[in-house]
Image (cartoon, rainbow, N blue to C red; front, side, top):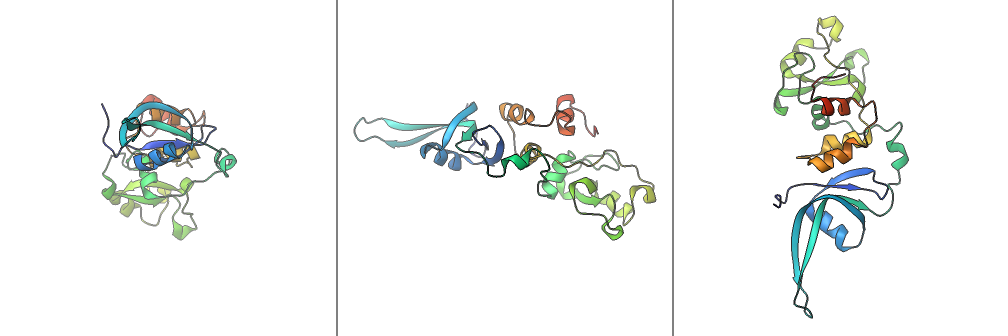
Length: 204
């Protein structure tokens, strides 16, 4: 059964390094232009193209779940060590599983906020290792104080995602074969890997 056309395709470089999520139109363009080295996973779509004037056959393009494109990323070596992905609320909330790391309850994104563990007013930084997901009520209660100063317990230690983890955090409706591929690129000691494999929440 074919999926709806909003299902994302995972693009990697030729070495298999996850790069980004792309839509079916971008994927078809890469396939037609011969920029795909190999593909993995299930077929997401079979798209019908034009009819060959000589043979009368209609062109069919299969779009798989994972496309490895020619070449390697120019900054690929930095994705393994010392890489810091851009910080956004969407990725942050996904990292923390939409849980407030103070009260432990799960919320919709609109009811969550970015909390600085060490407040900006106390020279804290706006970086992955100093921010956690917090519901607006807990964030307001904590105010411009540290968890210790406000008597609030932090339920998990914030961490900086690797490049592969960040690609995962950016995904929507990730399929099983795409997930398996991404998790294989997570570090062995990955917090996200442990959470996914155990089905546990707030595992440090």
